[in-house]
Length: 420
Image 1: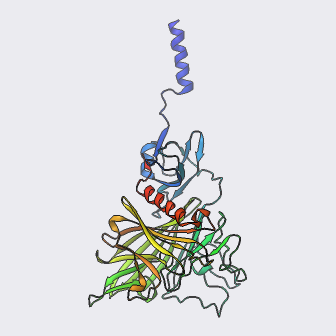
Image 2: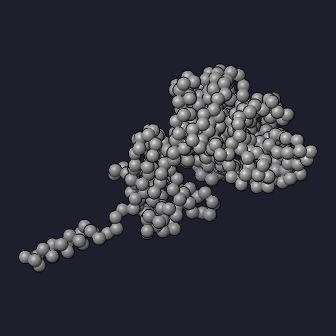
Image 3: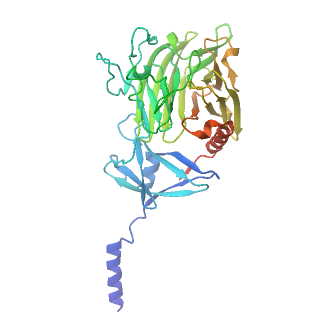
C-alpha cells in the first residue's frame, strides 16, 4: 500500500509540476480613498527582469489579473533598440490592490483595442497633400509663421507637431513663435492626422470632432516655455524659448501609442551670449485631460527660472489649489474660442514653484498669460498642462465641477500608485 501511495504521488508531481516556481507577480496598490480611472503604470525592464527570472533580451511580457489580460505597450525610451519600459493603463477602486501575473513571451502581445494616444508630424508635399509621419525633424533657423494670405496650407500639418489622446489634442507651432495650442475634442478617436489637411474644413469652426479652442496671440498658449534670467546689467527679463535665440530646434518621436505617446523637443539656445540647451519630453496617455512635460536644462544658472503658462483671454478667473506636496494653478471661464466654458491649468510640485503672475505686469514680448515659474535648480523640472472643455465633459460646465476635478487631481498626484 505504501509503495502504491508513493507511486501515485510521483505521478502527481510530474503531471502537475508541484515544484515549479510560482507565477511572477507585480502588485499595484492605490493607497488613497479615491476611485482612480486610467492610471498610468510604468515599470522598468530591470524591475520586471528581477521578477521574471527567465526574461531574455528579446522577450516581451504578458500581464493578467483575475484571468483577464491587461494590454501593455513596450517603449524604447533611450533609443538603444530594445524596450526599457512596460506601459499599462489601470483603473482602481478606493484602497484597491491589484496583483498582476507576469509571463515572458517571445512575441509582442497582440493589442486588440483602439489607439488612445498619438503624436504626429507631417510635411506638405508638392501636390498640396501631407505626407507620411515624420519621426525626426529639424526646424529651419528662425522659421517664420505661415502667411495664409499667400498659401492655403502650411508647410507642416497644423503648422507643426501635434499630440492627442481620447480626451484632448495639442499642437506646437514649428516656427519662431514656438507656442502651443489646444484642440477640444468631442470624440474619443484620433483625429490629428486629418484635421487641417483640407483648407475648406477650418478647424476654427465647431464640428462633430471638435475645434481649435484656444486664442494664442502673444501668450504662451497651452504651456509653451520661457526663461526668466538676469541681463548683463542685472535687470530681470522674461524671454520666450523661440525666435532667433533658438539656434537649432529638433523634434523626435520616442513612442507613438497605443496607450502612451511621447516626443522630445531639443533646443540649443543663447541668452546674453550664454549658450544653453533645453530638452522637453512631452507625454500624453489614455483617459487624461493633460499632457506631462519633463524638462532638462543645461547651461543656465540654478537661480534662473523655467516659466510656462496659460493664455489669458476673454472671461476667466484665476485660482490655485495646494494639497500636501502638489499645487495646481488654474483659470476658468467662458474663455474658449467657442465662447463656452474652458479651464486651463498648470500643476507643479510645491517644492519647486513660485507664485502665479500675469505677463501683462512685466516688460516682455510675452503678453496675456498667467505665468508659473520654477527655479532651474539641478536642471530637472516637470509640469502638467490641463485643458478641460465643457463640450468634452459636462462636468466642466460649472466652476464647482472643475474645482472638484482639480482637488482630486492634486490628491492623487500626492499619493502615487505603489508598484512592488
